[in-house]
Image (cartoon, rainbow, N blue to C red):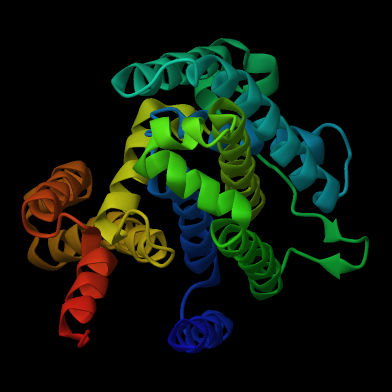
Length: 324
């Protein structure tokens, strides 16, 4: 019941947010929150550490962008095309990677994701190469709702993200999700109980890839462009950081982690520019370039002080205070 109240309050805050803050920035937060939640479904509930989720995020962005700009698809089909493309890439990468475990699994996902990155870098006719895919139109949802208005698009993105998050919650609490937890906790025992562990891992991998693709497709629609940054390995590192900071294996943790990291990236650069213009000291402009350093320090602090992540530590503290 407390969780339901919390989710209800969070939804109310999200509904009111575009009337208080900048809708485009808020939509970016939603996209990365969904991205982190999709990644958490794999690492937090299945125990698989993927270093290649940027491949799904960026692939969906490029496919959705081309579908809207060059193929003349309506926005809902463009987003669907991006999700399907991400799921297919996830099926290929997952099918190869789940043959190994531990660090070998992680390295295979990283290597295959970097192949996707180099494909995006070289296949300029599809991706625009280093210039990126520019000028992606927002179009009309169902041929009726004009998405050129930021507030209107915000509520559409929010609806997609809420439905995707509800799917994640339902998956985690389903029999399928219980099997995933069993695989994470004790894979040999899950095998001894007769479960086809590789099949469950692959299903979780593809679902996580598809949801990450939905986040990437929505981000392209929101910003109107797609760049190589979204398929680079650093994006995979960023989503890992979001999940660990917020709390791996918790539903709310990745949401909080995404908000913290993306808000930090955005506001630190703005703060440096503002201070530089006010004081005339150009050094402050470099603060925007120091985001990686600051996020790295946050990661170190979380590992040393909050090993369960922010939400994980809160849940653990509340559990200790609850009488048996």
